[in-house]
Length: 80
Image (tube, rainbow, N blue to C red; front, side, top):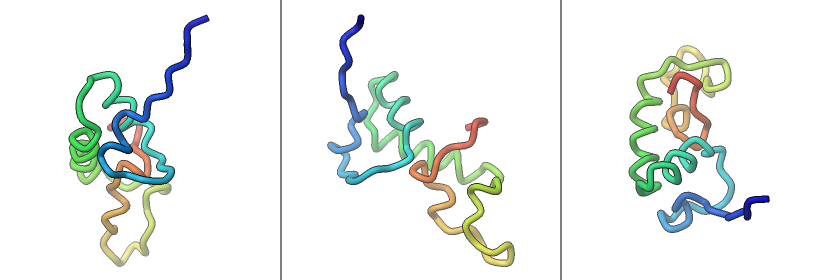
């Protein structure tokens, strides 16, 4: 059986604390060897252009979506 290696993808080194739903960000950082902060900002930019799903709508329809709606910590859509 392969040995399990715990790797946060550089999340702690980038200054992020606590738990986040950022598995896509960590997976990309680990797979590509790129810094977590770089991957995080790129995913945030991509998410900003994605339509809000029912899970990412965290504001009333009359109000503009908040910054957290585009955060990789709030999860990424499958098309991202």
